Every structure is written in structure tokens, then in C-alpha cells.
Image (cartoon, rainbow, N blue to C red; front, side, top):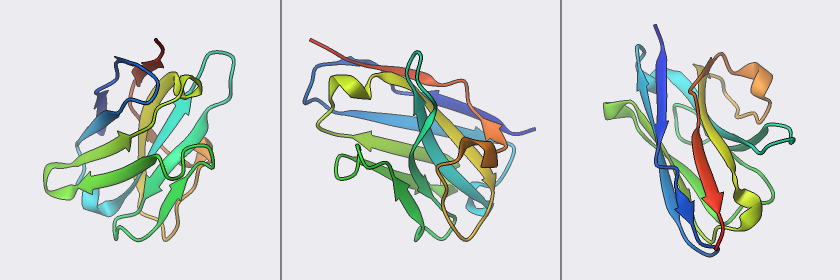
Length: 125
């Protein structure tokens, strides 16, 4: 029943910016934790950012802190990831994940039940 579709991935030069979108269907987003993960070829999937339904619990990977930020538009069941000052090492497939609401945010992918198919971000000249 839950459907998740990511969009916004693109080829961008180092130092540039992208805004990823995650459209969620089948549930009311205000009752769920939402998160962004990323995975590069040959690398483990890592948590990037997370926000709970109250908007007060967030998580950012150390390598992206200060450059990436997550936001939610609960009225439209949409999640965003704003990415600034992009680096080549940010190149990865970015995934949106959701789960029934918790009182905390986690970067453990095993804790999330619903996933999108991902969107490719490539940072290169």
C-alpha cells in the first residue's frame, strides 16, 4: 500500500547544489519517521538525514553535516533533501525511507520498512 518515489537526482559539478524530493503515497506522512540514505557502488548503505513527525528529531551523517538538510511537507506527503557544496564523494544512489513514527531518528537501514527505488546523484566535472 505504501509507495515511495524519489526524484531530483542529476549530474552536478563539485560545489553545486541539488534538491531531492520523495513523494509518499498510501499513508499520512505526519504519522511516520522519514529518512534519506545513500549507497555508492561497493559501499555500505549509510544514513544521511532523518526527521520525525514532530520535526524535532534529526540525524545527519558526519560527512554531510552543515551541507545537507532534510525537510517535510506533511500536507502533501513529501520529503526533501537539500544538498549544498556537493563533493565527488557524495556520488551515490539516494533512497527515501519511512516507518511508523518513533521518538528518535536512526541511520540504521534495517529499522525502516518502506523504501523507494532511489535516484542517482553524480558529482563530477
